[in-house]
Image (cartoon, rainbow, N blue to C red; front, top):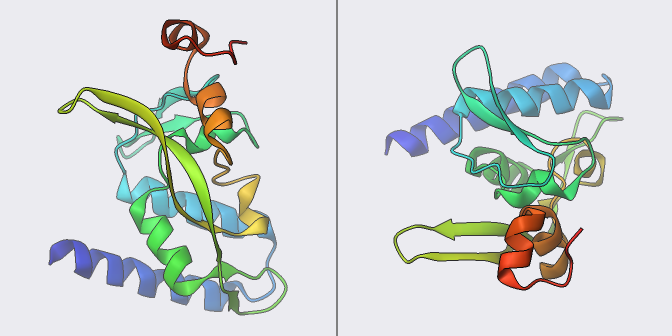
Length: 164
C-alpha cells in the first residue's frame, strides 16, 4: 500500500513538474527523470560493460554507464520510471503534453541467486525516442544483451561467440 501511495505521489509530482516545464529543453526533462531514479534508489546489479557503481549524495548506489550505451539497460528500468512512462507517456519537449510511450520488447540481464539462474530476458519497455539515447537505452536483442551485459570473461565461460 505504501508503494502505491509513493508511486501516486511520484506520478503527481512528475505531472506538476512537467506542467511547469512547458517549453524547456530535453536536458532538463532528462535531469528530472534521472533525479526521480536517484530519489527512489532502485536496486541495481550494474553488470554492463564499462559501467561502474557510483554513490549519489543521498547514499543511493546507481550504475553509471557510457552515454548511449545499451549496457545502461542491463538492469531493468526502475519500476517508478517504467510505470510513469507506461501510464503517463513520454514527455514532449516542444509542447506541454505527454505522448503515449511505444511499448516494445527490450532485454535485460536477470540474475536470480535463489534459482541459480543468470540469463538475458525480454520485458515490455516504454520506448520514448527522446529519452532512449541519454536516459535508459536498453539492449534490443538477446545477442545485444549477451554482448553488453556480460564481461569478456563471463562470455568466455558461457561459451559465447560475442567475446570482445
